Amino acid sequence: MQRRTFLTLGLAGTAGLALAGCGFRLRGFDEPGAVIDELALAGPDSELSRLARERLEAAGTRVHDGAERVLNLGQPDTRRRNLSVLDSGPREEEMTLIAPFSVQRRGDGAYLLDQQQLEVSTRYTVSDANLLIQDDLREEARQQLREAAVRQLLDRLRSLSL
Image (cartoon, rainbow, N blue to C red; front, side):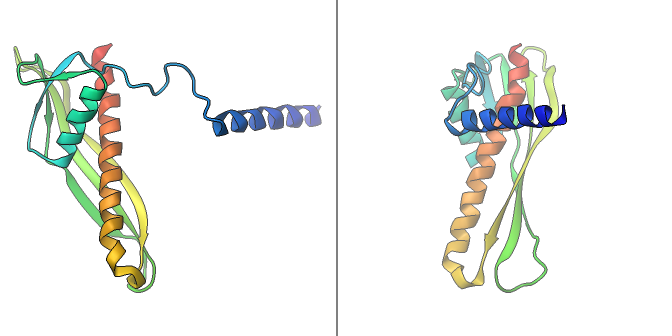
């Protein structure tokens, strides 16, 4: 009996890996759809807010100043932390992006989403042997963090459209 269970689980796992490897996705999963019909974007001008505007518009949301709902996106804070013990050779660093946001209704100022934080982090390795590429690695990590934060923001905004 145990052999049959093991064989069934093994075949199911293999089928799952084969489907994932060929690019199979469930219909409707992770498709960009309109998060909210229209939205105003308020806050400091930053790379994160520009990317958020771009992704919202790509998802079908009309972003304009006269919208009834206002996304208040605060100044993003990027923190870098050294995870390695030694100061020489390859070092692992962690970069974290934290950005506050909230969503208000313009008419009465009521919060539809209270003050929350987007928090994402990534790890990367830098080396003293390649000083020129360290800045490129850090900028690439910042871009990945902005992308991940905007994905997280869109997921949280989806709850408003229900």
